[in-house]
Image 1 (spheres, rainbow, N blue to C red):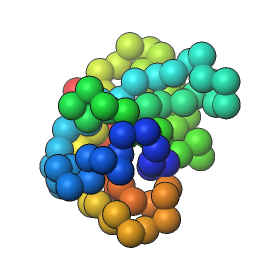
Image 2 (image 1 turned 60 degrees about the horizontal axis):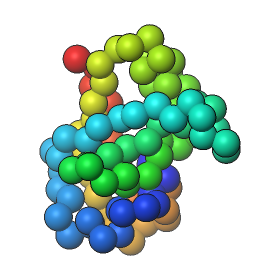
Image 3 (image 1 turned 30 degrees about the vertical axis):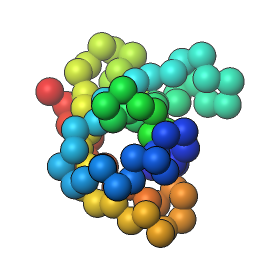
Image 4 (image 1 turned 90 degrees about the vertical axis):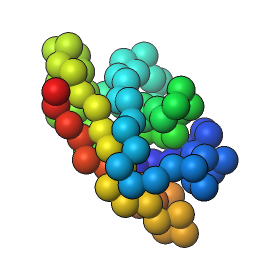
Length: 89
């Protein structure tokens, strides 16, 4: 996941198993398939562009999706710090 926004301030509280909210950002000027990731109302960042197409299409079809933190690696590269499992409910 590409990390930005509030993520650095939340690392100490975020934990494996934490439930995340996925939200499509169709009006995102950089990526029309952008999928933002939220935890406790704070934007952590986005799913990587190379991996967001299926999730974006499911959200566009009004499928209910969520995600859970599988692994946290705060010292890793910015796009590899958080590994998520996406769940279709």
